Image (tube, rainbow, N blue to C red; front, side):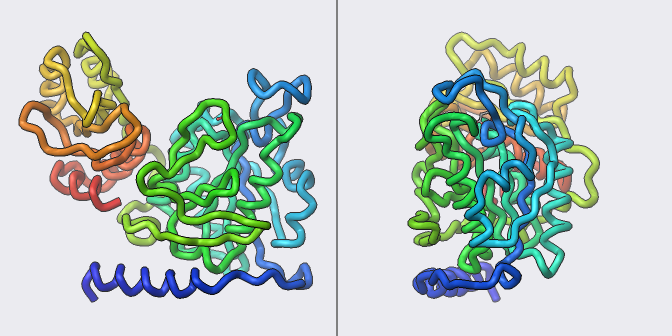
Length: 355
Ligand code: ASP
């Protein structure tokens, strides 16, 4: 069956399934689906000195077990088990943590008794981890990444309800085959399109032009759309064979920017560079010589936009591959993985449009 027909039929099947509302039934605990919660740290596991403090607190303090115990209602939705992968603020999530997490997710999803996975994570780089998983998870079972904007000790802490909602989605058969999801603040978003847009408010995660996959109401997921980009089982990336990821750096565009940041990235060993360009990925005359030099040395350069939205299109004034509508941090994740399977610029360009 052609790719197009396959997508059309699976889209129709998803729509029919989504149209049937999930019905909450009283089920004995042993019959509930098993959801594994993998904790990595972040504000959801953070504590502060007072209940009014929502910034400057310590992220990554509570353990996975403490997180689960803090939300007794989880037991009505799923049999949950917790595992600690790391316990750090997400600014400190490294490629090693990504690989460890992804391998564990794939191992757990291969077990017939596991219905889905929740990853708890700091919100700052949550979208990067979610998109990485979206590209390397080899299963149709739901994987849901969540976090919180307020620490566990704050008045109105959002962690408990976000965790409950994430487990609800991970336990839902309607969530299968949708790629990795991000569930926070009553919204279900795709890892591909969801991005953090505000440093402090609860409604920070937005789907931008693509919108959301669905909404959570009274702990029931209502799915409304599907992602057309290929993900999970439809990608060529295999983390089971990887011990490390190639260095890909992001260089920000701004007025009067020189080329020295590109030179430094190449000197440091970058195999790829994502340009967080101004506007639709424009590169300044001051930087172009360095960008061209990087390309001539075999470094793959991808243009993206620092604006937070829009597509990158062909422009003879600029050089580098087109980052589709991926934001710079997601373009970096995809470029790292692409470089694990090919160095060919045209194959990488195709991937940048496909995933
Ligand atoms: N700095 C924190 C982190 O990303 C912020 C958060 O979790 O909301 O881990």
